[in-house]
Image (tube, rainbow, N blue to C red):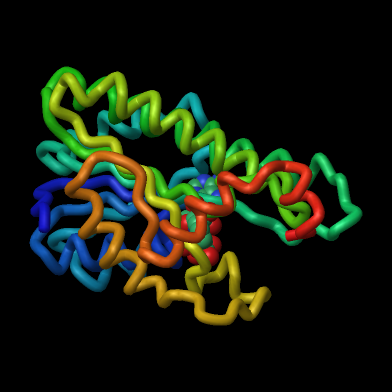
Length: 242
Ligand SMILES: NC(=O)c1ccc[n+]([C@@H]2O[C@H](COP(=O)([O-])OP(=O)(O)OC[C@H]3O[C@@H](n4cnc5c(N)ncnc54)[C@H](OP(=O)(O)O)[C@@H]3O)[C@@H](O)[C@H]2O)c1
């Protein structure tokens, strides 16, 4: 498994991001934990004060990102991994078209990712090394009835990351897209998902897969299933009502 010395995790106050911070710190990595909830971040940093640094930040404050990125890299004394895990997925009814709910999904899942990962790309292209990890979703593989804008946000993120990967591969930089299926977290608690993966297990698999540039599902079954699902013709997919 790839060892990292200094990392930024954006979306670190709960769920998958928080578990990634814990597991990186346990392996000796210094980690900047970024999210809005300062109390949660302070609790996390208290678990390993020598290795976990808390930075309270709203990813929709796009103008603040370049300065904060530089400050964090300076405080960490280097940087070899940036993980973008921030995400929003409000409940959306089957007949609901509410721009107020749709907007934060694009602002957090897409624009926040671009603001942070552009900074990572600039730095790693110059240093000729580094790993960028974006947490996408299987939900981005098709436009489904249930969550039109969440699906669209994750599809956009996946395409942006693919383009970064194609730009940065020649500079020795890894760009990793992770497409989890259901994971137990605050985002999904109200859905009572059957068979959802514990967040700590998802984090373990994400870090294991971060060593290989490309797009990764967390389970072989998902890789096979979505290979097929992506190829179902639209007129048939529409009738499935998924
Ligand atoms: N759970 C699943 O089944 C599942 C499946 C596939 C993909 N994913 C993706 O995995 C990622 C992590 O989600 P999770 O399941 O771990 O959910 P979670 O526990 O709700 O974590 C979401 C994280 O995003 C942060 N965030 C939200 N809005 C933010 C903002 N404006 N500024 C900064 N940070 C913000 C939250 O921190 P604050 O609220 O403190 O800011 C929190 O740390 C997301 O991208 C999600 O789309 C989840």
